[in-house]
Image 1 (cartoon, rainbow, N blue to C red):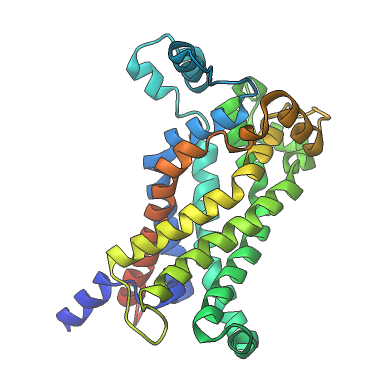
Image 2 (tube, one colour):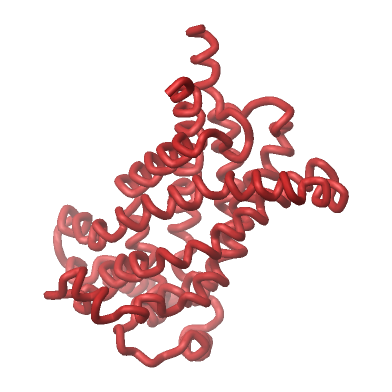
Length: 318
């Protein structure tokens, strides 16, 4: 009995993080909390780079380039000591905690539910259209895309987190209840851009993960995934997701960091970005995201899969 339990814990169980609803929720919550504690400062760096509207790289002047990045990232702490710089990267962690935990529970806990539904109703259609292996990947990707669009309901928490990271003066002296009561639907500004970002991003995240597992011979009726295989598959999905969603993520971030009463539209932001900063500005913040936020998604996705498998194994009989 002990050996069987150890074997279950050492592997991720079935693909798509299948398991009881309680196990999915608990595992996803653990993933969200773990991710937040480790990676919030990096998220702040990426958001501040995406928010910045000036040209940071000065060709032929490395010192000026470094100074520009230092100011863009650390803001008021740019001239302070390393400790002060590090602590300046934690604004919005309260909003971030609420957003991240709810997002991970919803996303990683909800996607397997949609997968099961799609399999039950349309599984044969996907297999007939794409074949058994690709059909499995397309079901996972489609479920991820549907979940990604629905994630828009969490937008107010995401918007407040981004404002705290990039424009804290907009929140200074205001309570959370006051903000929600006064701004109301204004907290959902950029919902269309967010949905447009999330749909392909989540499609690529879950589809890339499933495709990588299929390539490694891991699936519902085949071998279970080890920690290493889960991490590699998650990495494939994370890189695909970040790369696909990055341009729209820049627009989304700038919309959400604007003052509450700003009339500037998403298309206006796109036009000004191309005019003043060049097309390359659509990829501001991509480097730290690929370097660290990629591993962040790998970390949270892998933790989610294995903690779900753990709770599934240990909650039987409760």
